Image 1 (cartoon, chains in turn purple, green, red):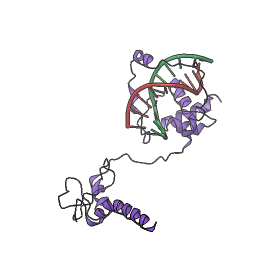
Image 2: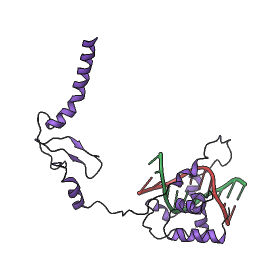
Image 3: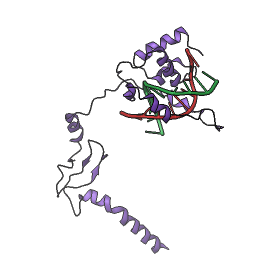
Image 4: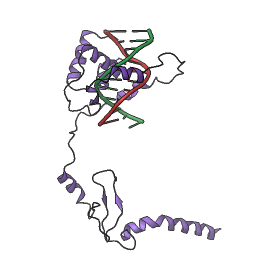
Length: 183
DNA sequence: CCCTGATTCGC
DNA sequence: GCGAATCAGG
């Protein structure tokens, strides 16, 4: 397949609409790769379009890096070595159809409350007190990470989580003991 | 690992 | 001119 006027036009349109290179590649089909699309886009002088609603990643190459430095860092072995095989699967990942929606808004404080409050007493680390259960809930790297916060029972956890924390060991010993007894 | 675009360069 | 390989980054 080659770049007919028609296909170039489709490319131009889709690119201007903010479609990603891989999306366009699938759109035009015929085994076209996203590399081919990007290459054509550049040859057409279309690179650097407006911020599209989608296009989540990769906006960092706006300023061309020093060609000299890159030339050195990117001296490619070309078709030198007898490249075994593999590589055939490359374009496959581009086949996924992606939803066009999503709004990249940060999670608003109000939203967090609405989501978190309903799940009983969970607390943030700053709200955590000595008497409160330290059982972690959720992803520690996430902003909605919380601790249980229920009244502590014996150790650092409430009765429920204390049980979860120590049961495995006990259960293991119990299992072992039982196995020995039954033998 | 998934993806994004950017660049180089053999063909 | 084309696009795979590679880079750089979210």
